[in-house]
Image (tube, rainbow, N blue to C red; front, top):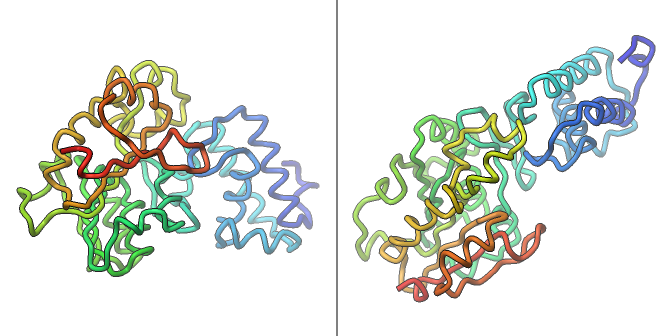
Amino acid sequence: MDPESQQHLTVNQCINQIAQKLEAGKLHYGHGAIDAQSEALWIVSKQLDLSPAEALDHLDDAISEDQQKKASAVADTRISTRKPLAYILGEAWLMGVPFFCSEQSIVPRSWIAELIVDGSLEPWLPADGKALDLCTGNGSLAILLALSCPDIHVSACDISMPALSVAARNVDRHSLSSQVELLNGDLWDALPEPNEDNLFDLIICNPPYVNAASMNALPAEYHAEPELALAGGDDGMDIIRRILALAPDYLSERGAILLEIGNEYENFKKAFPQIPAIWMEVSAGEEQVLLIQAEDLR
């Protein structure tokens, strides 16, 4: 950005300049923003201490030279490191809700978030019900569930203590420590032995599901994230097999488990041809997220 261009820019002009810079950097998107323009909005809004949505109401406002320089520096870091923007800013937004973010866990993103916020899961969440976020990572889905359904109790577990430390910061940030319980362990090992008093009405899970060939082809932005949170073995189903094998033990009679499998639709169908999955419609289509009722797992 030359000195002349740093005079008297509006927020919108600054966003457009940052977007051009990002475009020239040949980056990969998908960690909370879909393209260069979206990331530029995110970068500039952070300098204004606004959410990206709020910044859209201030496009014609002037932006200071200092804020322009800081936004430009963030863009330079994004291009030189190829790290997801959320790691550089230390913050991510999911369904309009802010989350602390660090390289100790993957960047908050999941199509499950759409289903939580639009109320699609409420038939499986009775008042005073119990939900589990398996493989919670940064805690974002557990937190969205708690915010959307204030009368339920949410357990959230993960094998990674570093990821749970991020989740703990996010639970505190949203003042949900009395509603969201964090547990450490390898899948079901994190939980007490199931009995009729501690079963879940709904289990949600965005597990590691990327197949080996796809892992090898991932752009640099994804390799900046913990491999443990992404890699799902040769066909992407290694963790999902372990999850579904024991899920019936932890579900209430009318309970259900909701799984995100991303681009692994064919691998899921091949691995579990006998399971009558209900495919849930999200913005990406109808092959990314599935729901299985407890009775169909038993």
